[in-house]
Image 1: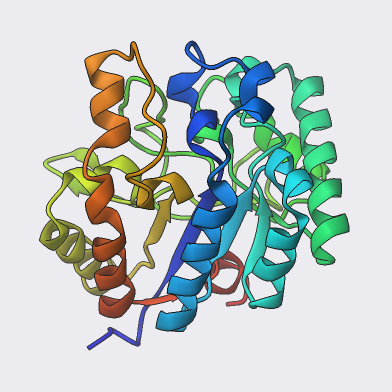
Image 2 (image 1 turned 180 degrees about the horizontal axis):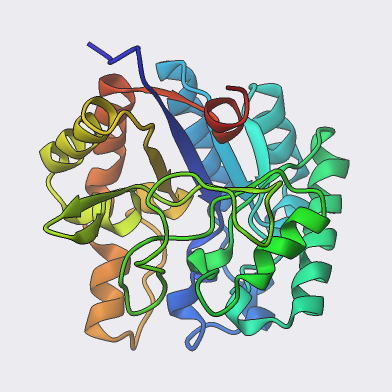
Amino acid sequence: MKPKAMINAMSVDVEDYFQVSAFESHIDRSQWDSLPHRVEQNTQRILDIFDQHRVKATFFTLGWVAERYPQLIRRIVDDGHELASHGYQHTRVTEQTPEQFRQDLRISKQILEDLGGQPIVGYRAASYSIGAQNLWALQILEEEGFHYSSSIYPVKHDLYGMPDAPRFAFRPDNAPKLLEIPITTLNVLGRNMPCGGGGFFRLYPYQFSKWAYRYINANEKQPGIFYFHPWEIDPEQPRQQNLSFKTRFRHYLNLGRTQNRLSHLLDDFAWDTMRNVFLTK
């Protein structure tokens, strides 16, 4: 039975396998258009899965993807999901100046609004790249008309993270009109354990993820956030060569199991869009 009293937020970061930050030193952006694209077919599969389970979700979408697959954007909107921004071409905020960040926001927001025909009020930074050193980005998001961000991961990680950030939704001091919605974690012995999806969902046994969401819903009385990428349900994607063991392990681990685990998650909990869960209270 789904715990109907608590609805969690389901989200998809719409990017292709070759656009992940871990491949930046292996695949140049100039190569992207010449590589086999799989983001459209994988996202269409996700939309079919959500339809089967009667789940609505938020699709944080790259402007780069939207430009090339406008019919995909139309289906996301027509199916009743929320369209949100993931930036233009998956550039981490840590690699941008404030002005570059603002321009990236404007370009991607305009593309998505033109194609989707709905206001874009949500944003998620590439690789959760807003943290203690660039909180100025939250103020710019507020100034550019965004209502919420889901860009901070309150964990210690070698690629991202702000372990001292609040674990649940909060309004930043420098952007009080913006709601920052951190990715779900579980506090264990004073340390935040990631359990909001992505590679950790593929790493942990499903029963751990199920227990974690139940604990957060029932004991902490908070909605959880889940995220994943279209390439995570695609074990047939082209394999990259000359990757480090860590990068190869993180990217390819249990890709063949993700879709089945996702189906269980959709059945075991109640889900809705980020906007509906956090902005319509």
